[in-house]
Length: 297
Image 1 (cartoon, helix red, strand yellow):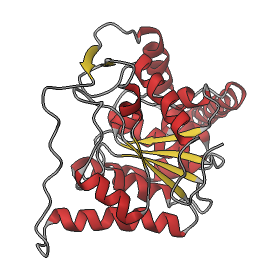
Image 2: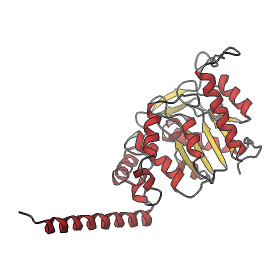
Image 3: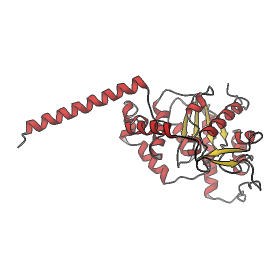
């Protein structure tokens, strides 16, 4: 029969070994700077992006949006000379991403807002993400890097495997033009109160709230599926006008010289096409005044 002293000694040895392993892994992280960009699940990928924004030194430019924006990886912007934090959150709405942006005291200088899910309402995915961000484990990542989602060993292994297996094969080509130009979103009758009205108001308040704090903003229409070459109208154009935030439509410009872009699943850009969009977007950013009237250098 094992004595209590023997059990206690074993427990202490296990605890010491765990501390030693954590310390060693923390040192490995510090020396190599390794971290995962795309993780093994949507939830973990979202948490990693939020962690990078909240737990690292300030970056002047942030891309906020859905999984559509999530495909425009920071390294694509870096290769074009611009450092960007990506807050493209899978299955979540843009408004929640704008909430995350304001959780830092030192706000970014410029926020690029992906329009793909701009009018989406709150859903169960967002509730799950809120709970995960509020958890003690996530909060501990602020002071101890191994607890950050992007630094988990399983996530690193997944990212390394994905980088080696990610190929152009299976990508779907979608044309910039379709037979009939898409109809603008229907306008609600004047004076009629609906959920959409409340959501639109929240969007304008979020954009104008950031502007009032000195943050420049640009709306970015990222191509997705067939007909990506047409300029957008309807609600998006109204929001842009009323909030004083310009819209960048790289797809419209690219469609002048390119017939097709490639998508992995009919909605999300594949790697080569995502790089094309990033390059065109940055070129347009340098020519288009932001919400404050200044352009990106």
